Length: 279
Image (cartoon, rainbow, N blue to C red; front, side):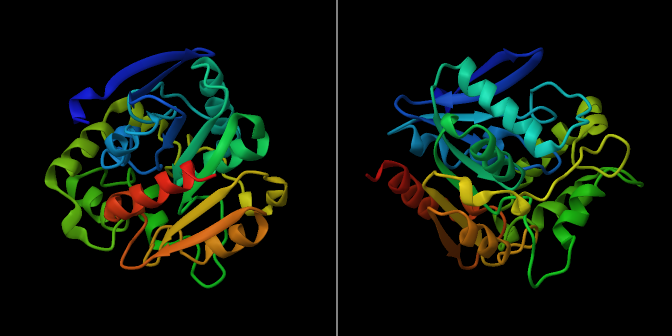
């Protein structure tokens, strides 16, 4: 399907104006983006949405604080807040339940949704999700440091954004100038800059350790995907999640960073669509 078939929509959820893009028909798959500066649903999953649309109703949401959705200070723990938004979003669109495919921040939000609202979730796909703990690498990672300090003096710039985005990938040549310019434009929007949830300062949202929660209570079939060279959330974090989630399988992609859905798009699309459609 062509990129121009993707439709941009808005829905009101408890006073939040939530933007999302969608394409295709069938069982719902909600793609939940990461938390870096300038992030949005469609930008993170542009290589995946048209492929999934052949079998699914593919939806890329902009979480509050990102993309075209409402920006405001988030004072409660971030993963729980986003889980409530995702659950309400599923209800508002009358989906019943949906597959959740989340990267980084979106992976943590998806995991928390499965914990707090299990009846809203069909299957769970997590790519380098946040909220974990590294057994072997330093914390915070260099990628996380680059993320949360992006707005600190001397302020945002294309150079600082390029530095951060290069932490997301194994091969920096996959990052185009158009992608950087698009993300910089969103990241420097005044409301986005003020209320970015993952930035050091008074408006940074509280972050909790998901790996400490009762992950053994998650009933869903779960696919955990990690890039072996992830420099944001190190790969060994996945071992703790895989060990605790009863129906989890753990897939490691070589020569791949934090953006598995981008760098390994063809393999990702094939494996995840197969996982979501298997009996």
